[in-house]
Length: 109
Image (cartoon, rainbow, N blue to C red; front, side, top):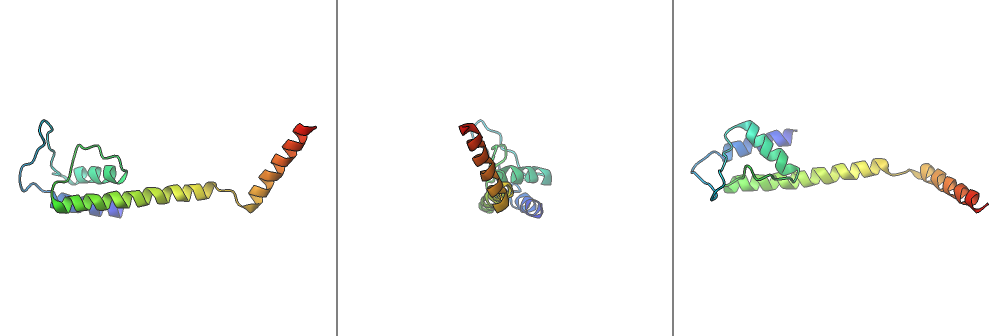
């Protein structure tokens, strides 16, 4: 949570409009508030990237890159932790194998 707030504040500071910028036929939205910056950082960290807000300054793009990398590490760590929790320990694996063997013997009869 601290990383999200810190990156959001930095992006809000460095993406203040120094000049007007817009893509053809796509209105550009400024990072005018902290809530818009928090939304941008959370969506960027989740690897969704809607494209409704984009960083245009070099520092803003670097911070967006940091948010992407931190988000990838956080998501992969979460997946590794969950898969580790779902992994059977030795006793559970032995019990599971014993039940499978008993079922195979019962089907053979």
